[in-house]
Image (cartoon, rainbow, N blue to C red; front, top):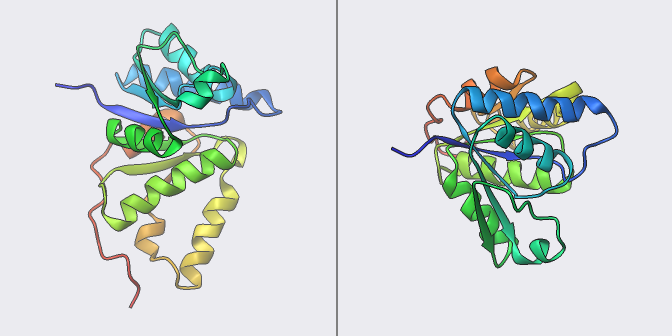
Length: 191
């Protein structure tokens, strides 16, 4: 039986506060403790590199997925358990989604935001029944949580759908939440 996998979306930067790097190490440790395989964007830099290196250091498995153009820029991690090189970013995201049982966004930039929002949309539309979560280090995702609530209040998003995005400050508890059974599809459209 294949090992359960969690995709971690996170920054190719480490941010300005050391709390983010430490949180990446805690996430890695929590994944290895739960025997979960890390699926990520195969970067060797920033929080991406930190979480992958720590999972590997602790004896865990890491699948990295990266498009050729980023590999050519020498930002790809070459010491992973498994590496998939794709032709495009679209292929990368699809391969990561297919290889993962759940998704978590750690702090990161616009690419991290785009990745978690896309798989969250797929959950809302019933394309998959996989949980999504935000690792809310240092209140990083508070504004996104507030925006989702604003969408509910303005009737662009169902309360049930907003609640499908797990939010947590503790890596282990967040992993446990997203690895619980996936949300049941309920029509997206508001009446």
